Image 1: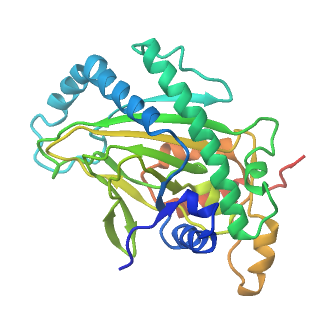
Image 2: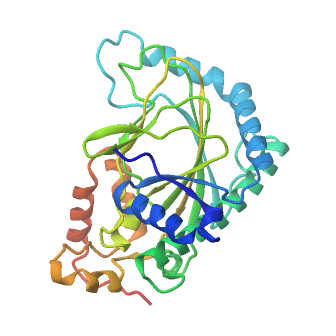
Length: 315
């Protein structure tokens, strides 16, 4: 089996652009996951983000999680399929930040995460341009597709910790699912593993790599690319040792954006009679996803076809 794809952003902009672009294309078409190096986010900033997040968990969330953990495994002798072994909260950046409203965050934490979010946002938009270029789409198409409603993109960060679990045979860190949104950029712990994705029927590890950003593609990019790129099922396996940090930033379409396959890609594949994905409003898909996150994505797409019984205005 080929090794896990690693994309060097510096090579994408330099003399080795063709080879790096091919790695990116293969990663998007055949893996759905890849890691990027030399992404432009300062290592010092990443170290600060790691520091403040681990301190915040120890100070504000560890005791509450331990109380949950003790109850979760009490009198349990078979696999638990209705909860995850994680401590998590969500920061919204766009359209309006909520970071000042989240309790138990000090000024140092808020400053570091605001700066980090701004850098990740820029990186997400650079990646969308590169993905669009690889697909032969007009410049800026994917960002425009995320913003074709009255709002801009939505963007937020899920901050998670996966503490040690005494019974990883009974509970997952996070149950298997695909991500509903657009493009996901993850800053993960480089010491504690656990993230896995499904490829060709086999669960593979996403290798921890210091100062790398892990990228995966969500359901909306699968629709917009007419299946050329696909969202991939992934999970977090609970570990007996180590507290795994996960800072996953989701760059998604605006809530009222109308999502549909890029016409240029539908025309390219028309002769193959590939199934065309449905046209829908992103917010409607999210409402459906909330209740079906841990189920297969295909029935969600089918359900959206049933909803789209009349044309949706795109202007």
